[in-house]
Length: 292
Image (cartoon, rainbow, N blue to C red; front, side, top):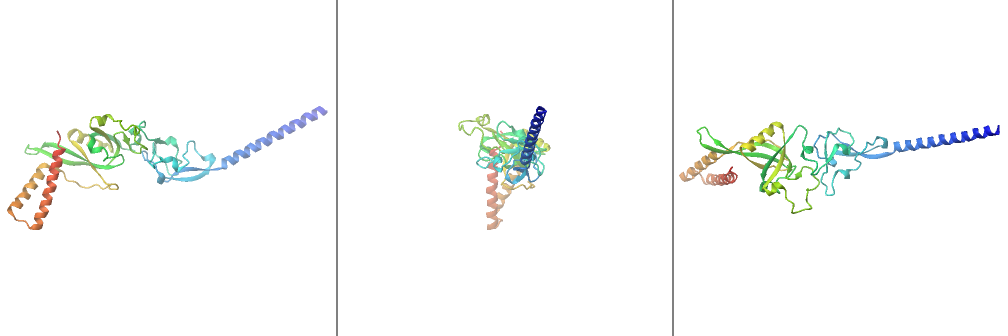
């Protein structure tokens, strides 16, 4: 009888102990689950290929249980020490969605250029003279693409002209530098040169539509491509008339005849002289870049 009573008491004590431990663990789990943590959320829709910066996200506090694995929890994690952006969206991120590293790409030489091509765009790469690109055209710049074509006019005379074939084109990469890279790859080795630089050429990649890609390739194959760098913030498309050598020569001939005849006023002569100088500069530039 006493033995049975002792067993019952021990079982009761053990049961009470287990129940107590369960309740303590349940309370701890509840407290941890309701604990608030900071996480980064997208302010608005972020398209694939977008370089993330502080203006695109905001800090919010959420219950710890709602924190997704590998979520970014600090604005400082998005940029390098020098303030450069480090991450690009690999896939679209919806408004209010947590920023998680599995949807981001840390830019560098290993990621390749395909990870920074915007949605519905293509990357077209052109080899350009090193002196035209190095220190002038950088990833993120906007340029107009000018192609110099040689052909024949309707009278089968040789004709050469410069045509603006594309406007407001985004530069994705220039040499080994890609859009959004946190640092220049190989910067620790100042003597390191890329194969493009050894040949006097630099590979420049542009973000274009499929139709623009065809235009770019045709202009490269049939003409000599040059870039016209746009100022920051200028995204206007303008109607640009092609400039031909015979048109420049014709205008210069008319100008010189008017000057010889003396049928222009002093103000007109000054204006004409300014035009003549500009025309001479244009001819010199076209001859410099004339296709060999």
